[in-house]
Image (cartoon, rainbow, N blue to C red; front, side):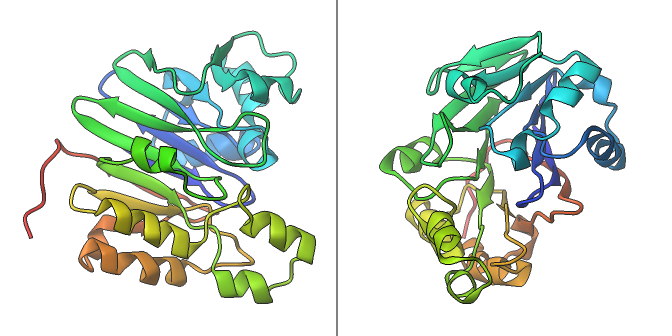
Length: 260
C-alpha cells in the first residue's frame, strides 16, 4: 500500500490511497484544474482512479468532488447524511455507505468510522490490504473511546494537528470561531494528537503525517516538535502535510514489529 496527500489544510484536502489493484481519492477540496495539476505532480493519471470517497460536506473536503466525478465518471461513496446536505446534486454514480459497515473496492478493504465533527454524518476512513493498515483521521473535535479502538494498530496514519492551543487562544479568530474550532465538534489540537499517540504507542507506525494544520493557529514546526519525541525522535517516520503541496508518495511495507 502507498498513499499521498494532494494538500491538507483549511483551504483544501485530498488524499490518494493505492493498493496492488485499487486507487481511490479521499475527498477533493480543490477545484478541478488545481486537483488535476496536483495529481500530475504525483505522477498520477487521474483516469486510473477507481472511486472518490467523501468524509463530510464541508467545502475544504467537497469543493471539487462534483466536477472531478463528472469529468472522470467516478463513483462517489458517502454517507446518507453527507448526501442530504445537498451539495452534490447531479451526480449519477452515488453509493451511499453506512458508518461502521465495511466495503471493498477491488483488493482494498475500507471502513468508514464515525467521528465527532460538526457535519451531518461525518466519517473518517481505515484502509486495509495485504496485511497493511492505513488510517485517515482528521476533522474531529475530540478523541472518543470508539476512535481509539478503531484506529489502533495502524501502519500509517494521517492525523489531524489543526491548532496549537496557545496560538488559537491568542490568534485572530473571533470568540465564536475559537469555540467552534477548539470545541468537542471542531478540530484536534497538537496536544490531543500527542495524547492519542501516547495512548496507542507508536512501535507499529511506519509513517505519521500531521495533517489539516491551520495556517492561522498552528505552524509545521510546532506540530513536528510535539509528535517527534513519540516516534523515538526518528524524523523519517514523521511528516507534516502542507496546504500547497501535501506530501509525496509514502509506502507501507509489510507489518513488522519495531525492535527498540
